[in-house]
Length: 460
Image (tube, rainbow, N blue to C red; front, side, top):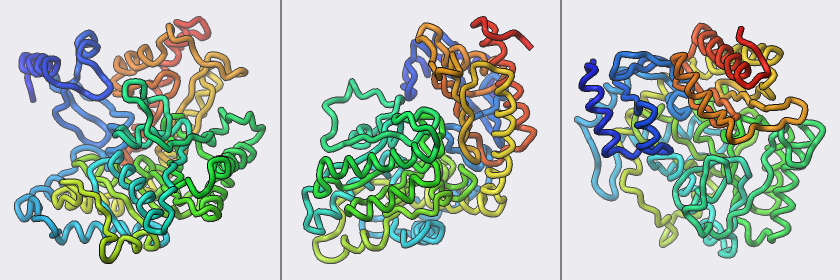
């Protein structure tokens, strides 16, 4: 273990040289950060000062199998000693086996796999394939992409302009990428149409996709992209009508349907893929995070036979190159990761423990006036906080809800960064009921403290 002196030296090096995403070094210095993690096991990690933390979000809801799995390290070691990379125009058996496994796991005829290294790349690839497909079909004018407000599909130059979620600050990066259109999110708690029921919200939000296609002209629309359940708005689960309607609309107008399973995939929602909850198959599926539990960079764009076949023969091949696409070492780690998920029934655990987790969170509602909504499915859950439950009003910026709650969670041994008024729970899928009880107890106390400071509650 790193001693205290060395820990401080390492921290200072980080402040001098490291650029951590979504943080700046001044903020980290003032808060005594960044914490330097030296080990992990299950849902817990240990820092360089010897303190153990619960990682409530499993990284970015990506460490699905949990920390410290030696099987992944062994798979990496074996492969890197065998074939660490391969020449242009070749591949390796382990990459082929991973592609076959993904084709077996995914629904319908999603059989052709293009590998990349992260969710942003996977979604960029999906959009490029969709546009290129239409071009090969003699419809080069189909360049527009429809996504949903309150979604997130990545941070690279193209997909940055899809989704329009609150985590994406676009002002620095304009002008916007051409052809990006946005429609309402089927969030029944905050439906843009003020729908009276979940079903009405779902139908109106799906209809908005058709209305947008017709307004701009089907001959100009390439694809629709959406997560089965969106993370930025706090895991709103659309009513059962939504996705079948979207599938039908896309079929009707020749629009490619892209399912972004980067977060939902590989057991997060209590099924292997989020779209399984709605019995709908997309034309293209993107995966990352849980495919390898973030032990190494790995992602994939999985394409239906109908679309993929248009890229076969002559000059039709996809002109798209990523240096580390189909990296054999990452492929070995991904296969080991998927094997662990299957053998240890982590998908079932996500469903069963997720149901318990959600029920425990729902049990807090009557005690906390600031809890507006509990939603989600499996281990993809969220709590939305409001200043007024009747009006669903948020909080004034000067209250600094996110910062204050994050600090309080830290005091309770949780690595759990609140995104303003949304608390998103996405722990490793190996979590137990006892772990849930520990997390819920800490959240309960933190909310009592925060509400007491705001004059609407009292300390328990």
